[in-house]
Structure formats: C-alpha cells, structure tokens
Image (tube, rainbow, N blue to C red; front, top):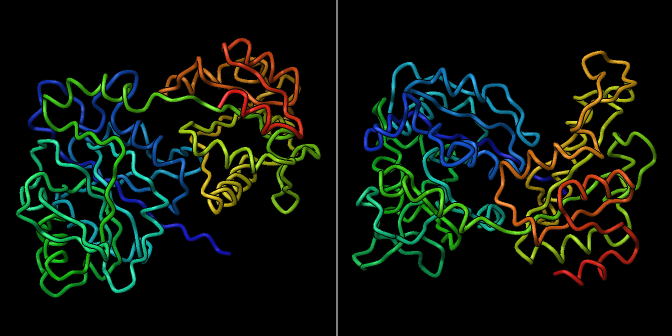
Length: 398
C-alpha cells in the first residue's frame, strides 16, 4: 500500500500589528512563548507526520526566519523558506506558483497552534469536494467574522450558520489545486478566507472536521500573555522514550537497509496499546554507523522516512527521533569526538524535554542495554528492559 504524502505550506508573513510591543524586533512567528517560539512549537508538532516538503512563506523580517529554519531537517521533514517580495495576501503566492506544489496540499497559519488529529483529517474522504478545513470551538477569538459561526452537517460539509457558539476556522486547510483555479479568482492579491474558503462553503465544496483538542491563536495580547500557562496545561503528558535497534526492531548490526527491517516481538502491539493512553513517543538512538562509514547520513534519513511511513499506516507516529552520529573512533573527522549526546549520556533526552511538555514523573524509557539504563537513570526516567513480555510490563504503569 502506498502512503501518500503532500506538501505543507505555512503562512508566516504577517507583521503582528496587535502584539507589536511584545515582538522585540522579531517577526510574529518567532515570538517566544517559553523556551521556544510559536513556530518552533508548530514545527515540532507537525513534523511527527511525514510531508513531501514543508514550505514557510515569509514576509516581514523574513531574514530571521530564513536563518533559523531554511534548509533544516526537522524529524526527517525538509524545511524550505520562501521570501514573498511582494505580499499577495494569504493565498496570492500559492495561486501564482501553484505548479510548484503537489496536486493537493496542506496550508496552515504560523500564529495558531492546533493539536489536531492529522489522521482523522487526512482520512476524511474528499470525493467531490475541493478542500477540507479544521474547525474549532469559538472561544471569543477575533477571527474573520464570516468564518466564526460555522457548522458541520451530517455529510461533513461546512455550512454558514447564524447559530451562536458555532465553530470557527482554525486556520488549517487541505486544498486541491482546483480551489485556486476558479475563474472568479482573478486578482493577484488573494485572501484565503474571503476568496477561497467562503465561496467554496457557499458552493458546498468544503468538508470540515472539528478539532476537540487544544487550540490557541497568539495574535492578540490577551492570548499571548496566557500562552505559556495554556501550553503547559494542555500539552503536558507522559513520554515513552525508546531505544531503536534491539528494542523496536531487530539489531543485525548498523541497521540502515529498510528491506531488512524486522520488528521485535510484541513491540507493535505495545505501541498500539500506548497510543490510546495520551503519551508522547520518542526515539533516542546512537548511530555510530554514520561516523564509522557503515552508512551515510542521507541513507539514515531515507531509512527513517520509510520507518515513519511504515508506522503511519498503523496510525502510530513518533513525536521526535533523536539520534547521535558521534563516536570517539569515527572514520569521518566531523563526527570524531566524545559526546554526551551519545548514550549513556543524556543530552538527547534533555533536548526533547526542552522542546516538549513531558510529565517526567509518569514517563518511561524502554531499552535493551546498560547504556539505555544509564541514560534513563541520569534523566530520572523509570526504565524497563525490553523483553517478549513488554506489553505486560507496560500495563503495570499505564
């Protein structure tokens, strides 16, 4: 079965006029919430899924976004920044460069965090519709008024409504190209909301899915000032830290060929059990094979793209894969060094704890070696040695 992947376009060109005094000369997507920016949080959240490519469309102070993200790889997703020399609204650049993107693609805002269920959204059958949209409860957000009172009918079609406390646009879309090929759209400056979404809703061409998880638009001073507490309150949950070779898959030595990939007994059953327990999944793996020229970094990345797609078919995703390519006996000089990123050091775990809201007291590390155990101990994580009875061991805690 082929696992289709699409482009994701993140709209990051806004000036943030309403929160200007909090920006410290930064573009709105780089405003700090706690230890990281809103755009960091969005990218870590979406990159647990696999996209063909991720584009960030920039405008105001674009050089700062370029410096931080352009050509970076986040959880095996390539990030490409694009500078809009002339701002064409939320949809103008997309229409002008439509052939640059996959035939269908995702679009999302860079100033709103939505903990949406990608798989439910992806699996919503689009059939005769032109696009899909995520809706969320309207909690007094100053959004586009025309898209702040919406309902979803029994056929998943989005409808305009006069009903109070309706649903609002969450700023996450899935479009077919034909959305931008309508004859009525002949301007170069295009508003996604007014000139794409609204007409398609009126024509019954947009499907909707309600997000019932955490949503926050940081575009107002009120929401920005309470963002830190709201993120922690809504996203704090246990983390399941896993070694890879010997724990998730059989270790035949310097694993890098996905054709030889074989799961350890009962690990898939364990992950399926845990995914219903509202936990994060993290992989923490030493990969000295890169340093020792057993395989290249590119081969490792290709392996993990296939790895992610394999588990995606089971609707299991890994929030982050941390790996250490360094080794004191490296053949490649740039990787030749002792590093506390390498287990039994715990800098990979520390990196994850910095970027995710992990409830450490309820978290567990599963591994198959003394290095894994020592890494867990340094990180104050409970440790379970992998065995064929792993699911029974896990059920003692969850």
